[in-house]
Image 1: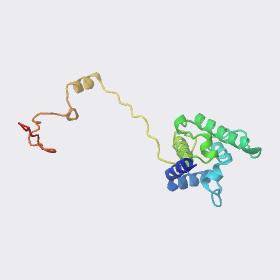
Image 2: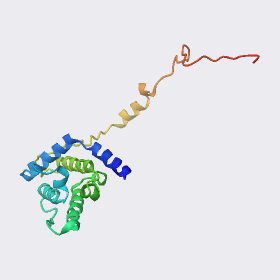
Image 3: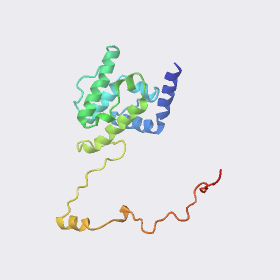
Image 4: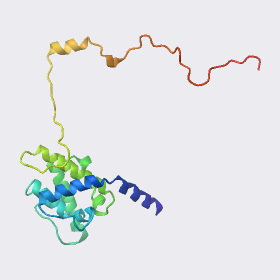
Length: 184
């Protein structure tokens, strides 16, 4: 029991209130309603309904049926459908939280990380005009060098390769000096 308490404390320590605040404001601005005034962040998101509504705003029709009743399995199904829609939207598997992270409130910081990954992915969809969450992802900067330029680069030894000219160990005296004792 003590170990479980330690694990919960460690996971709670990973949470960043500033990031959660940004995520809340982003969700509320997209959905156009106040959601987090009276309830905790994780409690509002827990049944997956808000997440599904968010996904439908970002990509209309991506989640055709959102369960609002039917017990915990229907609510967990909302989370699973949201995760599937996330991946189809372009969010990488490694950025998607596990269902238990949200449902059992095991790792809420991972849920926030997933929301930021979704926010970054919105930049890549030209049909989405904002608001955005998180920094804009970098884009590929492809360069084409001519054969002549590439050959010229072959002969240059950069300073990054380093040099040992003039390097000696003279003058170094780390630790005690070495003594040879004869006759002992």
